[in-house]
Image (spheres, rainbow, N blue to C red):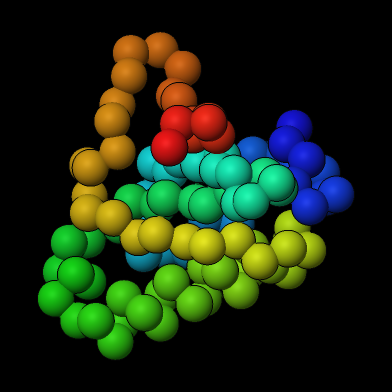
Length: 105
């Protein structure tokens, strides 16, 4: 569980939102970052089809849709970054879902 802006966030909540969106794959990462004195998160999500990268309008629309669904479930606004298919590192065993970047500036 993560506590961001006083809200308890479970990675499984983010995963459930992403699994309901057909254009994105099951590979994602939650990036923990420091914003001033507060912790924040961003979500990096892999696209299933790289052809979406050809249309900025479609990409922007998908990003807004993912962000809106996350806002409904998590009750906070979470920046979303859509990335190319197979660009998130795969590991043997359990997937690395949460990446702590706080203090690494």
